[in-house]
Amino acid sequence: MIQRVCILGATGSVGASTLDVIALHPERFEVFALTAQQRVDELVQLCRRWRPRYAVLGSESQALAARTQLRDAGVRTEVLYGAQALCDVAAHPEVDSVMAAIVGAAGLAPCLAAARAGKRLMLANKEALVVGGGLFMETVRQGGATLLPIDSEHSAIFQCLPDDRRQWAERIDHIVLTASGGPFRARDPATLHSVTPEEAVAHPNWVMGRKISVDSATMMNKALEVIEARWLFELPPERIRVVLHPQSIIHSMVVCRDASVLAQLGTPDMKVPIAVGLAHPQRMASGASRLDFLSLSALSFEAVDPRRFPGLALAYDALGAAEGSTAVLNAANEVAVAAFLDRRIRFTDIHHLNADTVAAVLPARDEVSAIEGLLALDARARAWAAAAVERMSA
Ligand code: NDP
Ligand code: MG
Image (cartoon, rainbow, N blue to C red; front, side, top):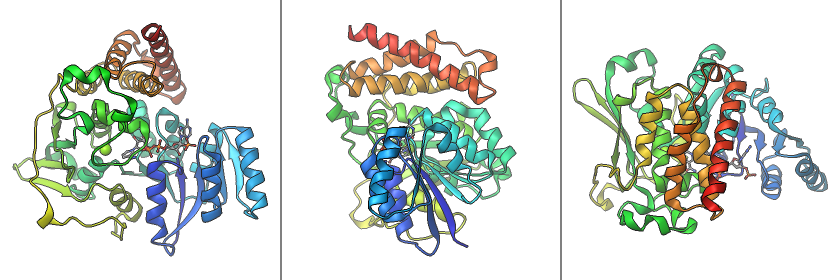
């Protein structure tokens, strides 16, 4: 049976890799909907190539521009716009699978819509789980959705575990997420205050969107992934560890109760976890190059230096604090990264802003049980962090 796929965030890095994998298997997949926020021309190009039933953009004027271009090109894609349209295409009755590849908390509502509608939900958009946590997992359960991790570390853990989730708890002693260390793994921490956005987004092993690239440089990406793992694998934070592995060949590991370690290896290419998600429980070609063991250099491991990467501890602190604290941390980090990319604050200010926001914005108990509350909490944290950016950059 052909799988009809909706790709949220189609113009991004994960969106592009998803389409690359789908292109290898025209007999298995049909592109039903593609979404973007503001890159109109890129989305129009994708619609010309893939002819989806629906496309979604951020605003009405962008949708009008896309409609004109598509009509002139003879493409019959229906162009919608706005946050509700993202939810509508993700939950559309004719959609089988949703690739959640929007960046940031903006992806939470369409993820919940897909989960509620019982879709196969391939989750790259880790921020949605960091913000939504318990509500997200409960919605997946109630909707009968199939949640498939796409983040390479979580895909690795998933691949090392049996299909039957009920066996996970008794099998796992702890999991080890690997981190490359990003561009500043070996840099003198005393010089980090002066790094530029260009240096921060130049990741040694992966080509990714700008936000996650900065997160990799601060190690906030791994912090978000610890929180993501807490929900995906239902593990308490003390059973989620992080080790530096600069080569990014081992994508993560499960340490079993009997001390046996299961690891998943491969070239650092997102097409692999994407193909795993698209084909699950089968396997299919991903288009990624294969690992050549004979040309591999040594695989090495190091502890994470908390002076260089203070952000990682914020994940454990937030998981130990009131539910909703992870949503505050995520909101602060989104604001901080955007301000850093705009050259309004320094690289090292990102951590201070994150820590200060989590200390100042306390979630109320009733804010975490429904999306409205979570979005209000997210907005409150963003407002606090934005005001702090004003003070820092004044
Ligand atoms: P990109 O920045 O490359 O792409 C983001 C996509 O989301 C674009 O299509 C963008 O549209 C769209 N988008 C941005 N803001 C909004 C919004 N407010 N509402 C709706 N759509 C929006 O990101 P990546 O592909 O790198 O990352 C996507 C997600 O996957 C992130 O959560 C990231 O953490 C995760 N991830 C990424 C990996 C990677 O290798 N890139 C690896 C593992 C996880 P437009 O182009 O119009 O701006
Ligand atoms: Mg990752």
